[in-house]
Image 1 (cartoon, rainbow, N blue to C red):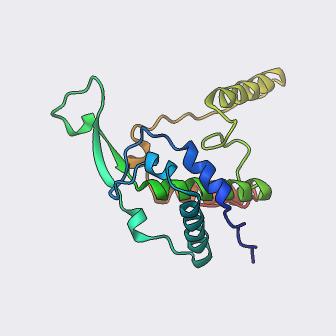
Image 2: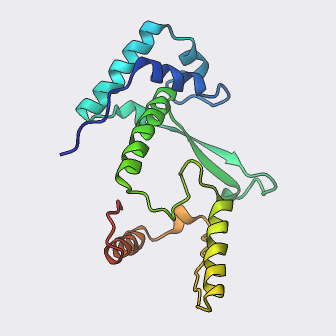
Length: 186
């Protein structure tokens, strides 16, 4: 069994709230980030208690899952076509604060256990596309210097999340983990 994650402290909750942008639209609760920033210390203590209870009870409030879907027009696209709009979900600001706090804990656990593959650059701090390109070029040059073949496959999937075959992706991911004897999370 794993040890529970460390409880949240009021100072880290306050720090995340301060870092939230005032320019972000609020969700259905209409509580904006500026309002959260104006809360007194006692309110931050209560919010911290609620966050720790969520983790302890493993229950995420249903109301925090609800979002307002807003369609944003893509620049230079015809206004009459549905494909010219990008949907965004406006979630309650307090759920975004909790999300940031829990993400820090999850990343720490993943780094401590070496779960994230070294070649994964998406959603990792300090890893950008340019570094990934350097890695690919290095692989190619090493193969060239050693007079070896260097195979590669590049996929550019338009609207990838909407169109990808999720079950197939999980199967491929599982096969990769089995063949490389790695512990992977689907």
